[in-house]
Amino acid sequence: MYAAYGKVEIPETGEVFGTGWLPSLPDLRDYTEEHPDVAEMVAKLGVSPTEETTFAAPPKVDLRQWCSDIEDQGGLGSCTAQAGVGVVEYFERRAFGRHIEGSRLFVYKATRNLMGVVGDTGA
Image 1: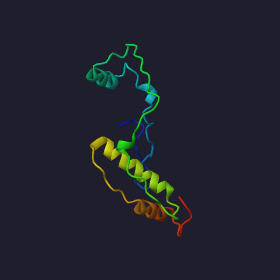
Image 2: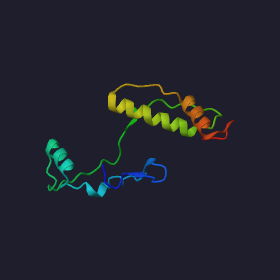
Image 3: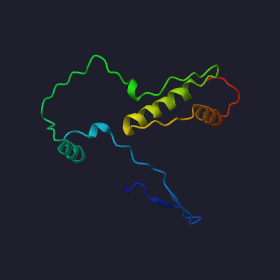
Image 4: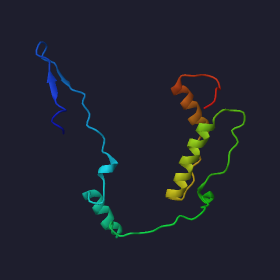
């Protein structure tokens, strides 16, 4: 725990409060090849961080084998829910080799409820 994240006592009442200070998030620029965590992962992978490697990406890649079927949203403006569930289905199939049938309508309706709107105004 950081020293600056201490408790503060109000002398008049004796109440103790946290200061609310939160440490900064790690900066990815701090994680170079020399960082102990990165060095350990590099060692596990069996690659040398100082080795010059050249990798040419292929001109195109076909990811269709991991994508779910195209679904028709009809007249409902649920494009973001369609995209969000499609991404989850893709990663589930890509990572675990199984298809889950996510509910696009549930995501759409839950989002609308969180936004506090009624009717179909898109999104």
